[in-house]
Amino acid sequence: MRGCDITNLMLSSARVVSDHCMSTITQSTFPGNHHTMHFGQYLLKKGAITPRQALEALDEQRRTMPFLGTIAVTEGVMTVEQVLAVLDELNRCGPSGTHFGQIAMVKGFIDEATRDRLLDLQRTEYEPLGEVLVKNGALTPKKMASLLKEFIHDAGIGRHELAKVTNTPT
Image (cartoon, rainbow, N blue to C red; front, side, top):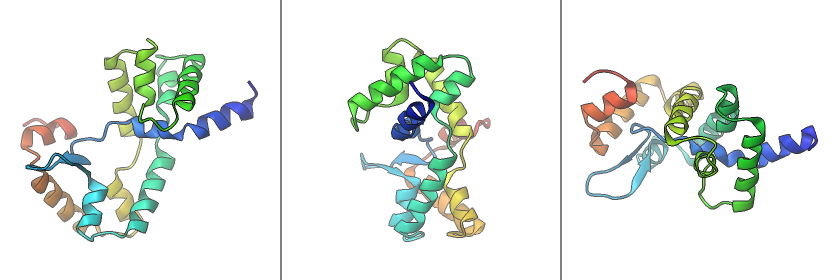
């Protein structure tokens, strides 16, 4: 396979970015409602940001997030050939909602604990949506903090769940 073919394959498989697990802070199920709402959706619903601001921030977030396969190779838990096999499978599946980590586990390349560790590493490598919105001037830091507190309250996120996400003791 030529270098440009590999690059095109990886670019066409950009949906692997969505393989990261959204943390409790950025995605929550609201009490009495079985609908999961992402923090960006919450900001839109509150009228705090425009759809254009949300899309621009999400695009920037996507551009800076490393691919899970790249992290797996860097961490030495998968080979380049294994990553390419997973990407090939993703391309065959089409937009089925299947994620890189799921396919890598089904193929026996990694186990669930390794996938979770890779997702944690991926999560630490990208800017949270709120920070991107502040950096882009869509929200002030004070307004962002206020909206985040409202989201946590409205979502019914408790101290224990918040501590798990922020790695602080309860």
